[in-house]
Image (cartoon, rainbow, N blue to C red; front, side):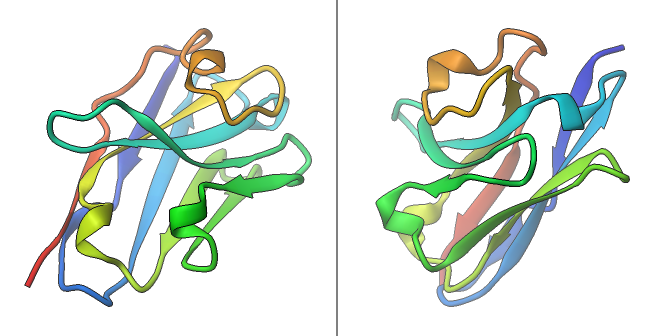
Length: 125
């Protein structure tokens, strides 16, 4: 079974932190680049962060630069997104997936493994 399970979302106040996890089953993550994307209500899914197969390069969308950190632990077959200083605009369902080569484009992901259910992040007072 090829599956990516996203977890770690929740309700937090502005300025709070969350760490999202992307756990792989049936696939070895070290073969792939990993990307995080998010989709707010009524919006298109957008790029958040990506990390290369060797742990570099990393890229972030400008709105999260300096607040979010993408990482991977290939021994645990899991990727992470550490989110600090959260803002209401970060409210969305967050998804991870893999690509054969490092990319920031949504269209390059989701080809090898279907998109999962994501994990909801809500930032509100």
